[in-house]
Length: 439
View 1 (spheres, rainbow, N blue to C red):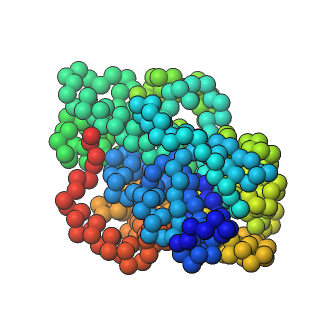
View 2: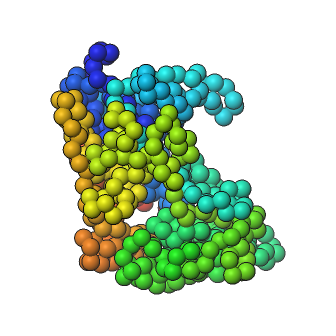
View 3: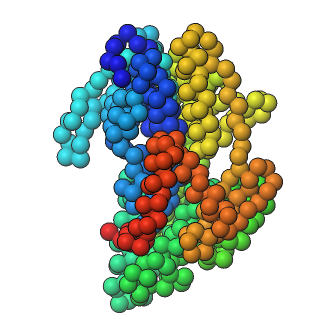
């Protein structure tokens, strides 16, 4: 990979699923061949696929098993990595500013730095949107980052041990979890929490009744779970959740959160020691008004069908932080992992066209369906999906399809042979590693 500063410099900010896939594709296609410099910027040093965060939070996935190190990935695939959070943009000079990097003890690891770009791609994803609900920010956990998911897991592990050792009956709300939002994250977290509680008993926390003591409540303001997906999928998922002992509350809004539970708009108070907010998303607040870039109410950057900012043709946006119109003009491309992956494929070609002085073309989103994991595939295999519009699959076949989505992401990052070997190694050592993290 050439160090020449004369080469066109493409800077990708955000190492989530879409951003990392794009940087990897551009590194292979342009960076290795000396046709452009490619740099990925992120405030973390490693990547975990965000659809796995509910498993991290439940303790059924160890993050280091599925972590991609940005520096190693950059070395292998022809791009560079810069560590830091973007916090400034100068469109006139075409440069971004990275905030100082401060460690846990307050020591500065890196000062504020500027990074020049010729083409900038913003792929910074989304964060939870609590819509200003009183007490939500102070008293709810969020699952926007690996750190947040692991902090929730540690809290639950402590709660299991406390319940195991105490001699008095569980207090009202103790070992209870209220999950606000019945989209994919909330639904999958509720199901995985039941799965985790059963495993905790298997590993010796036998004073806990995983069905009776762990009370799970899933709250959705819409009239059904998974409101963005097909009604048939919602109905089946609702039945499966109730079969797992999850109380599903629909058509009621959370109007307040305290350190003891959540209050609903009909006056009911649900006591819960643990509260998770998984309802609604928005792009990070710092994107709004970033040197004049046009954003919508959710802080998403307004882009053309070619994913170019409507304000500046040298700036692109993709994934959850981009407000990309659908081809028919009816709404925006949904904030889903498959959309970000498709946009990474599109932009890899668009960047090549851009170097040739050609327009990027138009992005067309293709909905390949939705899959919702509702239990551990090896034991129960409960998964439901709406594939290619109106075909519903369930059970082992659906679980296999869900696993293949992740393998597809891994294959994009590492190649098919490496992904296949990794999957084989995981299968061969599946009995060596514990199936629940309790520390």
